[in-house]
Length: 165
Image (tube, rainbow, N blue to C red; front, side, top):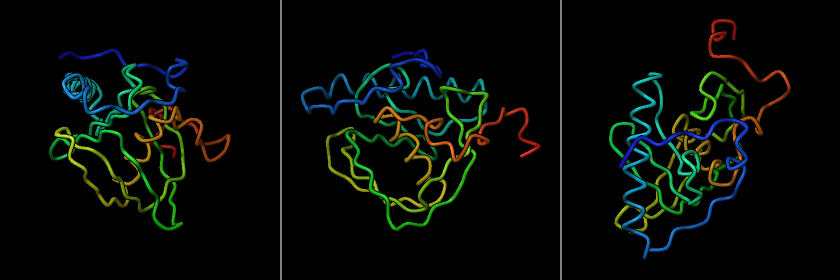
């Protein structure tokens, strides 16, 4: 259990597709969950932001998302489905490029089916910023980072320039 080093923009591992977990790996999964928690909390302490993290962001190429908003939620082998065609644009940030914002288009509503850390099947309906957050993290599992989803060539800004956006 430790704070892990985040892979940063340009690292080729960020573009790899993650593989599913097997139930027999549950003990290993719990160690990774703790590392994701520790890494997310450390990032929050340093940067004042951070709601979720995907295993590939710390170099573990497995399908796992850890979210901590009001309480921790673990998504093992998640399957994300978008609902409807209503989208919105948002300035997205990422722990893998902490000083950069990227304007992306995300679906307003989605659902996610996953195993929890006891290997029970669960489903969650998502909307608005929570839907956007899980779409962002889910992309990491498929080797897609926000820079690849930029709305256009003008959709990049440094966080220090947010007052101009």
